[in-house]
Image (tube, rainbow, N blue to C red; front, top):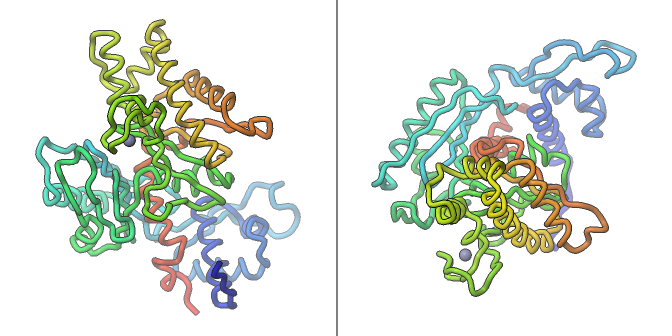
Length: 397
Ligand SMILES: [Zn+2]
């Protein structure tokens, strides 16, 4: 353990960033409510807000509704100003790229996407990515302070490099962060798409009041972003949460990771589509269509139940290891119906250890299939919340 003390400058910084983060993630709070939520002295909060107002980051909007503030002076609701810098978030998936510019309150200002062609290279992707970001920033009409990219892995996150994803045009060591940053003259941060989605849930979604939870995305594979004690758990090599490679049948089919019977050889979107095509002798457009079909077709329903049961088997091992309070299902998995989610939830709770001490809730992600795009944006916003970006500009001595 290497613990260090905190001096008063560091404390000041932590307090300022805490207030700023709450202003972004809970729009419309009053000074009184900020004081209550942060536990800081009223004067401290007032001074921090004054600092932010001088820099035109925050504005007062309308009086907070009566009854919420009690007696005394009228309290004004605080919002980020229209001059506050925004961020862009882009999601690089296996099929294409989708991006948004959002305000620090996570309101969408511009949205755009492109699909990959049969033959792409790192250079051609960079070219399109630069154009997409440039167009979105222009369309938003706002100052953009940073770009967050969420991408399929494996990644070298600190170096902002996409290493060597399977089935991704043979691209190796693509320094996307550095190159895009150079092209657009903006800071760029990279995060794995599952971790990014978990961050969106932590700061703006269903995870904000939950200390331990996991975001699980079902897509070409299965991955998870794990939040433990309110922090993203990234592991040592950045491969924590690889739920898709939990082995559920050691004699099963060969996975691209070299093992047999990994969860994603049963339950990834391509595998589910293959299994439904084999069963019904027809093709399906995607998981959405399969989920709706399974709700009305009896044979489809029982195949889907089998698949949900296999998914639960992987989740049971995962939950026994991390003991989350909640599991959020996203990416294409967001198209699972309520009954399908309930079935998985009850299977998991029936089979995990410690179920007498409390249930694990299994819920659709707050951001649905868009979770990785919002996640990319929140990855960029986190650099502001952590004080790595804009801090000196916002708080003068
Ligand atoms: Zn595997």
